[in-house]
Length: 184
Image: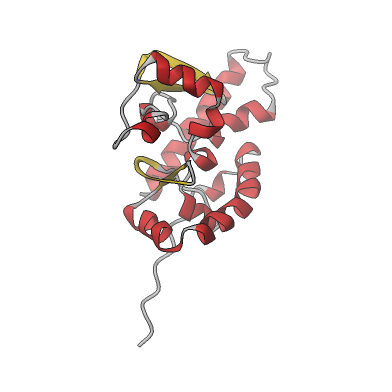
């Protein structure tokens, strides 16, 4: 699992380096633009947010629906796919409402002080906000503790987001902490 995260991070860094070489920004790609590529979790092969799932569909149906490149919209430096032009238009008006919190990074991992990519099929919606999780166990932790985990993650996000924008990849390489065994 750790090796996969390193590969994803390497692919993202290569993308940023390639963008700089090809002349986006004349070789002086602003740090903020480079940070956006790593701030949002994207599919490592396509660069699409939410692995192509329609972010609006999380809020209007029982399950998220895959989007299509025919109804794409670029926001935050990455493309987002939608299942219909109506969903794309709704997202365009207020992307912050429909985009996953913390750029799609796992809420519980973030509350523990490190980043891991959330998986689009492991999600929860609370207070009209979309949260993604790295594992089923992390989602269960959220359901058990709710607001406390969100408050802690909110406090961690600015720091860790800043490290992503600065190219601090070592945060992503951290492993999930091992659960302590119950006291006898």
